[in-house]
Amino acid sequence: MDNQVYLKILKCFGAKGTRFTTEDLARELGTSKRTVYAYFSSKDEMIEKTIDFVFSQIIQSDTDILEDAGLPIQEKLRLYFQNIPDAYSIGAIIRHMDDFQRYYPRLYEKVNHHLDMIWDGAIELVEEGMNRGELHQVDTVILKLMLNETLKKLLDYEFIAGHQVSFESGTKAMSDIVLYGLIKAESS
Image 1 (spheres, helix red, strand yellow):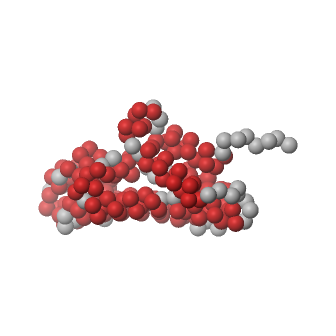
Image 2: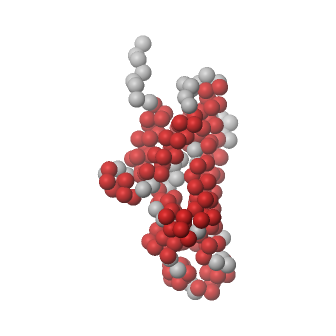
Image 3: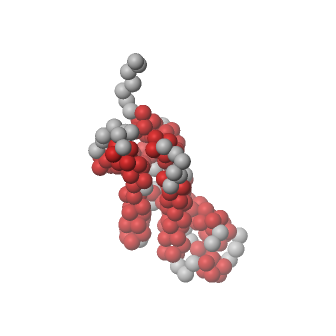
């Protein structure tokens, strides 16, 4: 399946949420509804495969970082935090979670499952670094909670608009706080 199809579904989804129609997608693709149904058997399948597409891209790029044996843990962590997902793609999905919960409960659970796992690689790196004595000891349950909740807030349009922060600046600030902390290192 051409990635452009998923990007067009995301565009329709971003504009209308779960209320987009097959006709909307066909118009976006410059094709017929019949052609759309040659790719997908139902609207549910369109949405589910698009969710899978978005999260598989995130998982693959995170895996590439985690499996790079030539990088020290600190560099892997820096890269992992710089590899924050595209705000539009994931935000288009998150913004319509109420509709998912109401009309597509199985897909709602799937998105939540993906979001709950999005920081697992970073947590594994932190635990490995702590075990090696390369990182400070921290409570990884609380760290993961902080990361999950911050990401969800940064994907919430009302929060972003109300606090005049962009997704990109917010994720950079979050990663800087996690990676470099609040207290300046004492000079020797």
